[in-house]
Image (cartoon, rainbow, N blue to C red; front, side, top):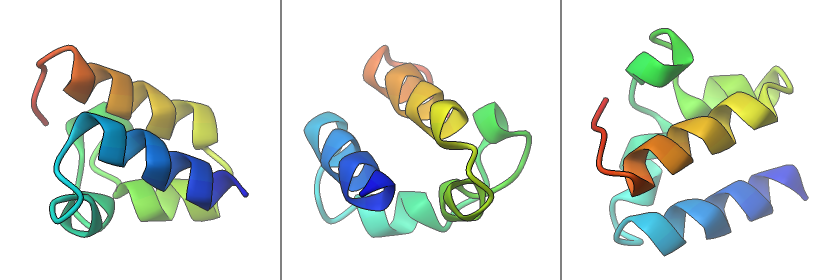
Amino acid sequence: MDFAYIVARAEATMHEKVVPIWLDSPNQFLRGSTPRECIKLGRIAEVIGAIDAEDEGAYA
């Protein structure tokens, strides 16, 4: 359920074609980890924070 929720949140913030790329790209808000890696490690709140940062106009 966490993965589906995060994908839905990301798609609400960015174009749906960008989400798969975003999931597998290093992210500065995640200290260089990819969102997918963080999800696997249970760092869901951090990934949601990265989505919120994207939504606010910050870019990683």
